[in-house]
Image (tube, rainbow, N blue to C red):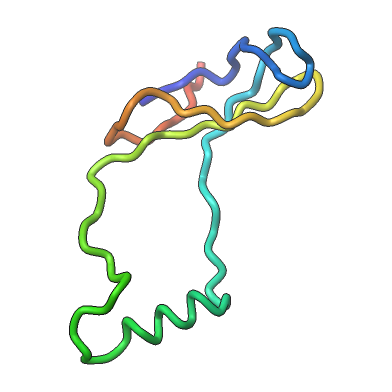
Length: 94
């Protein structure tokens, strides 16, 4: 799914329509050393059968997010593009 580099849309901080730079949202990175992550990995390791919290199914498609950065005030807003899609978002090169 292709999306343009710049979109003219409403900025809540400027309180008017301005041009925004579009960036693909990569998501947050999990910390591998947090206590909850270490506890879960310890639970899932070994031969004790099915463990609570184990992933049962993987989603076939996701809702794609983009970050819109206002050119005037540099304020960033998240926006979901379309419905569930299997294709990755990519920014058009013109």
